[in-house]
Length: 422
Image 1 (spheres, rainbow, N blue to C red):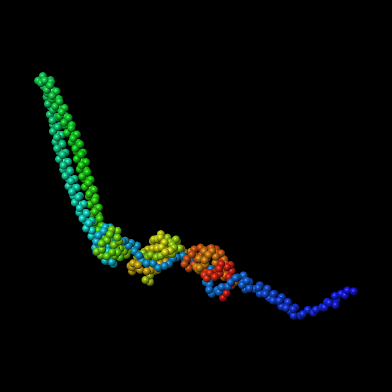
Image 2: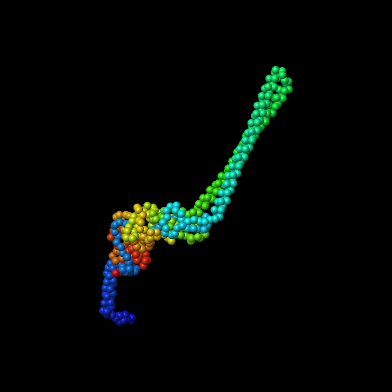
């Protein structure tokens, strides 16, 4: 007979300690779930890192005016500061010193050029010789013309005599006083005189034209020589250096008694009645500059209004040179190269949404910004408008009163949310 397993089954008593363990684990789970539901925990779970708020720069979005300007340091320059150049080579003899006041057309110096002066004298002598030849040709022409006219007049007289003789012989023949041979002889003599007179007249006309052309050639040669002399006289006159404007002698570019070559700058003349202020403008602002824009010039405890007069088309070291002229009379107390403060007003707008300018404008091209919300920095897309040195215009993405992190977001690494710690 097979016995059952009743003898093998032994009931075991459940220990009280394990039950308490399961109850403890369940309570801990509920506590963790409740803790995780708290906002602070949710923020920590939704953010991968935490950044101290003290390391960031925060600004408020507000409605107000936006003034776009560019400011910097400028120096006083002369609107007209011509340089006097040596048009011909030679030894320089200066008549003025640096700093001397000069009037327009005043003699500043002389370039001694013996070669040029000798050439002028030589060409002047050649012109005198050509003038003498032209006068001699004119006299010779009158003499030859007079001789030819005398020959023509004699031939005309001989022709008239021959005609008269023919008339007498013809009348005598008709009266029967002479033979017909005499009439024919007189007719031949008249024809010969007529031909001689015609040749004399033609010769006078041809010789007159020939003498006229010869005289004209001599006169044209004289005129060419006179033009050459006139040009040399101009060059000799250019050896004298005259001031182009009323002003003051600036810098002497060469030494006294120096031998200078043609085209070398000798000195500058500064027109103190037309001073301007030159400043260097960053390339990013230069595209907004335009002639006629208002500006402010300040220095020596005073302030003057100005207008942009010129903007250089060339960029040098990421900067563009611009000049401002005084809007009104030029101050008397200013001097060349004096340093002044300059401010140019590019644009002014009232009642626009603005925020302080910061590194967020350059980071990401100004397409997004971090806004402070419930202890977090939340990334938000924006669209910027006009920009000044201190503010930027907000076109989309923000509203008045928003707290924006304007700088210090390099450690965010583009995260959508970043927890901010005190």
